Every structure is written in C-alpha cells, then in structure tokens.
Image (cartoon, rainbow over all chains, first blue to last red):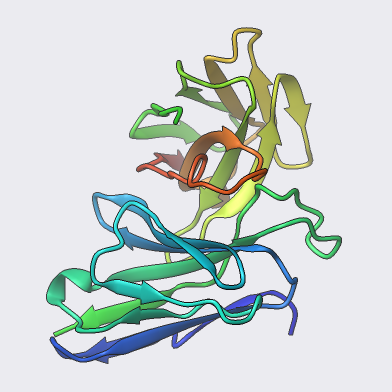
Length: 118
Length: 114
C-alpha cells in the first residue's frame, strides 16, 4: 500500500528493554522525521533524516537512536526504555512527490505508535 | 528560527467562520507559513501553506499581511468535525536541511459546538 506506515501501532514494554519502532514510506521522500507527542508538550522533534545515511538531532534526541540505511525506512530505537519515554510516536516524511501533490517542505505523518513503558 | 505564538484554545459554533491567528515576528525572508490539523489519535495533516497575501484551497484560506509577521487561518462555515488542534509552522523550504520549520509547538485547540 502506498503511504507511510508505522509499526507496531501499540507496544507495552518494561523499563530497560530495547524497543524499535518502524517507519516505512513508499514515496521515496528524501526527508523523514520522528516526533513524540505528550500531553502538555505538543509535538517534539526527536530526530530527522535528510537522506539515506544522513541523520540529525532534533529537540529531544537523548535516549533514542536512529538509522537510515534505505530511503524508505527510518527506524527509531530506544536502547534502554524508561518510563519517561511513554508517549505517542509519529513518523513523517516529506519531499517532492507527484503521488502526494505536496511540496518538499510539507510533512505527511503516519498513524502513530503508542508506546507504554512500565 | 522564527518562533510562533498561537492561542491555546478557541471555541465557536457550527456554521460560523473561524479565524485562528499565528504571530511570527521574526519570520525570515525565505520562510513559508504552513498550517496543520490534528484529530485525536491521529497524526497531523497538512491544511494549507503560503508565503504572502492570500492562499485559498478547498479546506481553508490563509491570509498573510504585507509585513508577514502574522498569519490567519480561516475556516469557513465550521462543523463539529472541525474540532481539532491546529498548528502554525514557519520555516524555509528544505534547500539545505536543518530543523527550521519543524517545530510544532502546542497548537490551538479549536472546539466547535452545535
């Protein structure tokens, strides 16, 4: 299916465990992003990537690791999950695309991954 | 990085026109203004984008004065389904990367009543 998909949609884990959230887009967009959303904080940028093998930190990168070996995938890993990382995580992509009809600086978001760390 | 200021919340009634204003006093010459809408349990969705004057699409209008220090998202004849959080972002096109224009803030929670 075309679009941007996140998996898993829901995840419960325990403190100290490693968790990877997956993000896959089919538009060959250059840019991909990870945000977290918590009540009272709005959306905060964790990491972003301008292209395969190019990543950069956002506002709240501590405790997270990203990689981008392929243009279409941008996994987010919590190497040792903490309760403060309980949140809803959104992946997004942007880039010139005849499929979406949107410009290069307009983000298209996935449905989100709700992570609970016990 | 141009910071934006929006009202935390607004409410209106079905059939009314709603205007949400965003202040961005430090907007740069190459910055665009982009608005997103977010429903509960969903990711934000692009509504409209503009650089100056007025932009209109099938969903909304965006008014930008000549000094570009603010912008107003106008939603005509709102319905209950327009209840959502609306975000204003200001930043450049991605010509060289960087996180400019990627800060969402807390947005404006619009509540439409019957």
